[in-house]
Image (cartoon, rainbow, N blue to C red; front, side, top):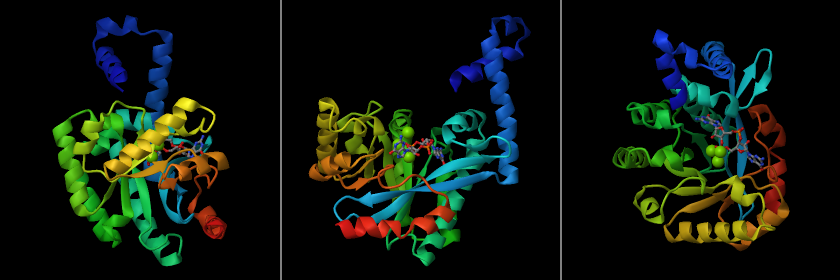
Amino acid sequence: NADLAMYRAKAKGRDNYQFFSDEMNIELTRQLAMEGELRQALQRNEFELYYQPQIDLTTNQLVGYEALIRWNHPEKGLVPPGEFIPVAEDSGLILPMGEWVLKTACEHIKLFNSTGLLPAHGHVAVNLSPRQFHDPNLVTVIRDLVTTADIPSQQLEIEITESLLMDNVESTIRTLEMLKDLGIILAIDDFGTGYSSLNYLKRLPIHVLKVDRSFVMDIPHDKDDVEITAAVIAMAHKLGLKVVAEGVEQLLQADFLKENSCDYAQGYYYGKPMSVDDLYKNIGHYEKWRSQG
Ligand code: C2E
Ligand code: MG
Ligand code: MG
Ligand code: MG
């Protein structure tokens, strides 16, 4: 983050080191150590993609997955992305890491297509961090990966967050247009946590809105969340977007979303993120959602 970069810059000037508190030093040391470990982890192939199912709320069918990175740390075990993505983003390691994620996801799409883990036209959604999104090579990298994996580009979905959209509007729209022209599906992640205006969303060449888990989790008890979610779904539909509800954990939430014409759902109620091995073990489970209609 910006603070860390500033501390680093200051650390280079010898007069300023006394401004470091012990806590800042400990945090900086921890981040630098993790940076080294992440670099090694990339070389040693310690990362793995987990997949969380996304369900069509009208048909109860599996429509795709979101790919979520995990770090199989030799001592700490499975490390969640919240603990290392910020360090990767800050250090620039997110670029090779993100490319590994995209490449692996494309290869998995190919595999899932041939082994029945994805329905026809099913997709895999990949998260992009701000630094990745603003990398001038992004579009070329994605085009080459899709071509090499020999998959339809419509099966790759890209998730970016609202906050990223605010950085540089014109260049953001240009990048989105180029990805859209490739046939990639574009989704706004964690919608509702940023400051996008309706008017702004209308200008963006996107296909999907993902309603943040913080709105979904207290449905149906929280009256505000109920109203906001219903309004976001209606608004998104008016703009021609599909809506995914994130963090669906209960039947009551699924029922509410169905009643309010939400298109897709993702959450522990339908399935946690799973390793590819576990996807194969659980694939029969999704027949259940299918038959419940
Ligand atoms: P996200 O993209 O919003 O992903 C959804 C997160 O919510 C995932 O956490 C998922 O495990 C969790 N989740 C899904 N359903 C439920 C539910 O019903 N209840 C609860 N409590 N949680 C649920 P995860 O896997 O820890 O990922 C956290 C964040 O890390 C992601 O948020 C995303 O921003 C980032 N991330 C994950 N993988 C990647 C990646 O490959 N690249 C980048 N740049 N960021 C990633
Ligand atoms: Mg996401
Ligand atoms: Mg999200
Ligand atoms: Mg999130």
